[in-house]
Length: 160
Image 1 (spheres, rainbow, N blue to C red):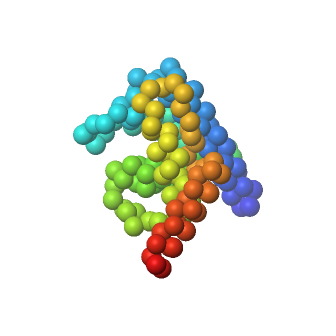
Image 2 (cartoon, rainbow, N blue to C red; image 1 turned 90 degrees about the vertical axis):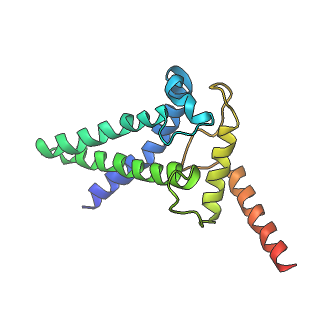
């Protein structure tokens, strides 16, 4: 059981780097035509960018399904790690950052403020070139520091 949990966790961590590479080299590369609408204002709930969900959902589903069918359970746990990352990505990106669902509107955690700031910096570029902050869950240290200083400023302002 510990090995299975370890496989899920290692896969989850590996997915952050896979998502970073896919975002930088695929979404801001040869499939920019699908990702571009995510960087532009629009009124539709859905975006062409939402199709990227399949890039990660299909391997997860196949790993779980085929691993179960052929009794190769390591693939089940890899598929579960991919699915867990997908869930965290959805909750972070679509719910917390872009607020497509209004579930965590009162969240004011330092980590989440840092994630929001890094993503905001990423979205400043409306073109596929010269982007930064392609990851989702691992946030550059400068945004952690900025999130801490923002909280301290708010705390100081409320005590005055």
